[in-house]
Length: 147
Image 1: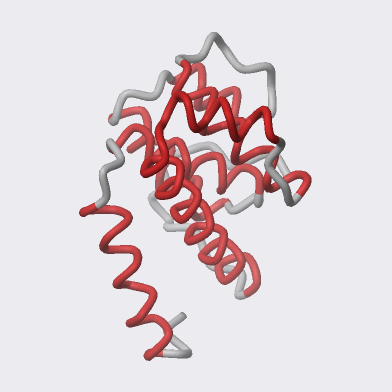
Image 2 (image 1 turned 90 degrees about the vertical axis):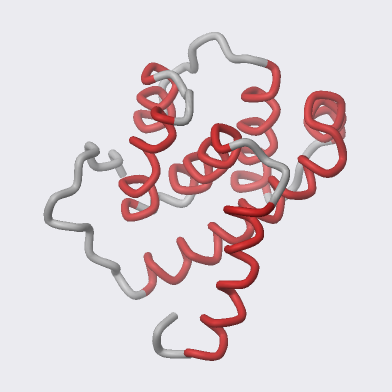
């Protein structure tokens, strides 16, 4: 996004709100980012958020299962809602009524709206990173996504 400074500046306002001012707890934010990174095979975003997701309270088993596309461990209802909405959208370009209703009941309207916007924002970042083949940091701490 450095190639379009004005677009980058404007996007940073949305990022600032979603990451630091929204009503979403860090754990829910990190899960939404990890689902987006995994579904879009974005190594950079995955590496940037897998460890912070665990620090925010996501179980290492959940993070590992998402990474490896393995069956998920037992989930808390809010985790299941976030994952289901994200996976359904990124895989089918839609969210079923069932997934929407479950997410609405578990998360409420504002959280569901902010999670949707956060996944959309990180989808844009993944598109940019994967298109311009963003390099991973030399000191990365997470395993590469199996793609």
